[in-house]
Length: 60
Image (cartoon, rainbow, N blue to C red; front, side, top):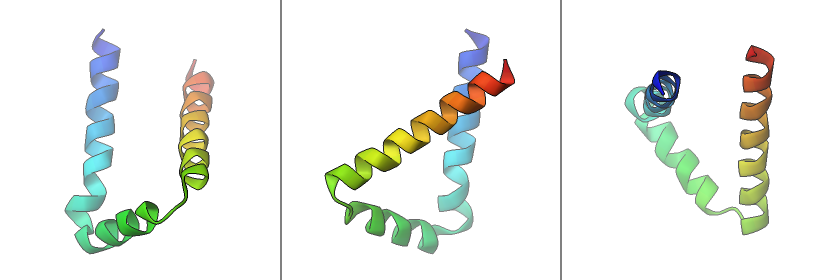
C-alpha cells in the first residue's frame, strides 16, 4: 500500500510541475488538447498508459 501512495504522490508532484512553472504553456497545451478529436485523444491516452506500463515492467 505504501508504494501506491508513494506513486500517487510522485504523480501529483509531476502533474503539478507544468502549471506551477509554466502556466501559460500549460494552458495553451490544454487548449490544444481540447481541440483533438475523440479518436486522437484515445490514442494519446493509450500511448501514455502503455508507456507507463512499460516503465513499470522495466523496473521489476
